[in-house]
Image 1 (tube, rainbow, N blue to C red):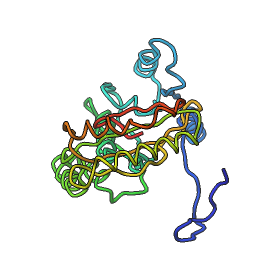
Image 2 (cartoon, helix red, strand yellow):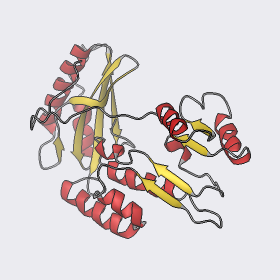
Image 3 (cartoon, rainbow, N blue to C red):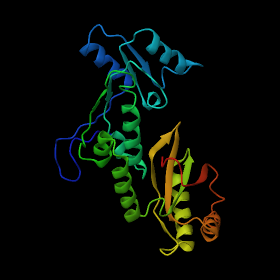
Image 4 (cartoon, helix red, strand yellow):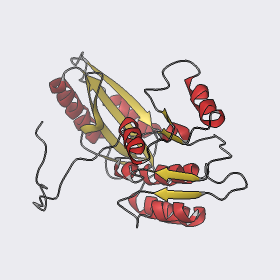
Length: 260
């Protein structure tokens, strides 16, 4: 796949790819602050049994200066001597194709901010963001739960997202991209026969946000509506005429925990 050098919409040349892994971040921290001690907690460092506890105990008991990690370091940990927390690329999760993306961004920032200043010394939190005006960032910074809820719930009402409707996610996964395209389109046409604008909205099949895992291609269909007997019957009937597709797995997830 060729890298884009020009925005396909506005034709701007000011485009680049961005990403920061924890290992790269650790390298930059050591380069910027020579002499500091660091420990990293991510998917690569917690492969062994009890790895989580060993890393956290090392950070607490061996006077490690900086703990670098993914979201797994956010929840449920008490670090009484931590006075500074940095959140790198805090708005990355805002770009996920998931109606909970804003909620999860707010939740993560609030949780990680709670790791600083838990003892007698005051804490400080630095948030790196390209979207400082996002209400997820603004209300997290202010710890304003009430205003975040009011803003988010109004948007969900307008856009007809839960709790004002149900989301049904139909996933297609398999080794053959051509078969997945065919079966998802057949399934989509079947759904449209039984679901109309009155009892639900069916969106055309598209690649999943993570469109390939372990060499299996992934597509999805999203339905907005109310899960009731007629909706369940419509989905069941839509499985007709797809017996010939042998290499594709279909799963139906109601109000999924993530949209990937």
